[in-house]
Length: 117
Figure 1 (cartoon, rainbow, N blue to C red):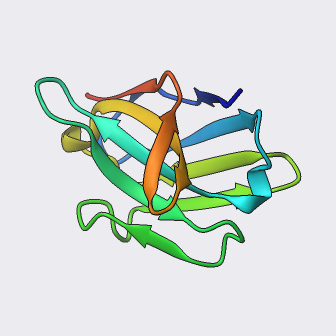
Figure 2 (cartoon, helix red, strand yellow):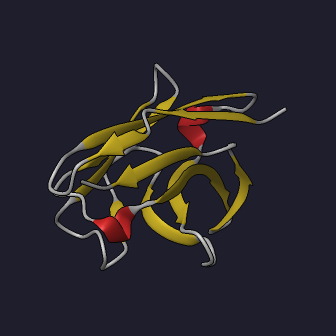
């Protein structure tokens, strides 16, 4: 059974940084691409960043390009999202996802990120 557990969210001031983690289990982690998504209040969930199974290929939503970095550690079965220069538009619940066939097929329970002074 696929299990994804996010952590690392919290309250941060504008311009600050956070590092999210997602620990995976229940599947062969190194075989699959992973992703980070977010959902702000009153908005639909949107993709933030994607990473291939090897960690060599990444893709970012334009809204976070240059500020966020997705990475993974296949031995630890963990995917990370380093978020820098945060602003209020980044306030959302952040979810990691397992990707198969170019689509996200499972999500974790999410971790809240709030950017506020």
